[in-house]
Length: 482
Image (cartoon, rainbow, N blue to C red):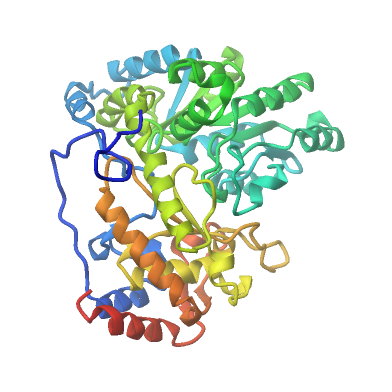
């Protein structure tokens, strides 16, 4: 969307929608938030949503639907097999991506499971620009491993580079030659690298990478869950793409890949997912896994009402007036906090604003989960639920030692069409307060540690009484009822 000009105000992001349904929020007093954090085992996933003021954990499945999406749900064809809703969804995806074959699944990680089950054997190496937690877990569970080949610049916190999610092309070819093409079942590119700040990948880089995999006969897979943000960044940051429509860019990207999968909880603004497969024989080689793990081939574990909404959501994911709000709000949040001196991942990417916890709480060793501690501090001091994206989100090495993350981030997701700018300003204010009192924050340690995906259900405790000290300092500045 064009920047809205003001007569007596500096430019600010503008919501290109009006609010028609509202949900009441609840801001607990600080002492109650401290108690809730203790009860949750210092894991923001274990908090009750009713105890949260600003839920910025994720944008997965919590984006607001439009009026057109909600009205579309009324036409859903609720059939176990042969639902007309499925065929409408398949036709829409074929129209947009130019790929005929669809395997439906209930969300993105279900797609990852099917792909891993089909392709990964013990000892295999799957190449990625950067991993996502569930994508990696499905591969390692089956005895495979992941090689992350994002360019070194992608792991630099403060930067002006527009596409920090790009894969290193020299490392890609060298890795294929080292592993041999036979041992690389596929290359997975993530359009919007979730764990390193939602940073996009350029069309030029995707084309060059898929040219390399095609040269060696290796399948190319695109994780399109965050594609709508990536489309926005390609159109606004990649010079050769500025005159093309989002639909044209989407089709150009799709033409590069053998397989594309997505979480509809992000791409499409509803709850579901799917795998698009270009080759018919390859499609048939996977179709038996859908009824085994998901549901019949014409619903795949999804509600058909959500599928109808998603059909509209796919078109809305190409509307620049709609998809610009997320990146613009994120940029505003990142730029304001950066101006305050808070270490942020720059430039602002998609999905949310990302705080560099390794710099904010540099006194906390990685084995005490600095990003995990910082995200707990933000809930205590503002009722804001963010998400740890660092060592806590990793899994231990085979010998039980910690696998230290490349980056220690706190993600403040901005679900689409959910929060207002004044709420975003509140978040900026509380993050700045926590940053100015960062010396009070100390680390965490596990008291219950699941073997896999421990960040979802694990429970931790603070290494000292630092949460009480932090809450006391907060009350001294804001009073007990804030």
